[in-house]
Length: 135
Image (cartoon, rainbow, N blue to C red):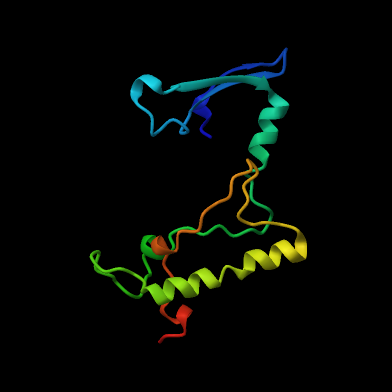
């Protein structure tokens, strides 16, 4: 969240006022949209919401990977599909890691704290050539 979205901080009452643009109504007509949402809440609740987005110590975030990476060894023409149906099935079967984490640690890596489940879009992902046992 950008600091520019913070409108007011009341140090006496320990409250903060900020705004956000709701994306839940993106598919609706303009006259049905809620528009910009303004929130005033306790600074402690606000900080709690921010802290959950701080990665753990030593956690490596992935940036500039796949098509965004400048060290990609293979250049793909934009009109070619990345995977065959067989390769997509193999990727789908590799999701056993999620079930293993669920059974072992009672933790679902694809479950967001808001309660919704993230979707893995394999067709828009990039994997190295040797990922499927190729050369």
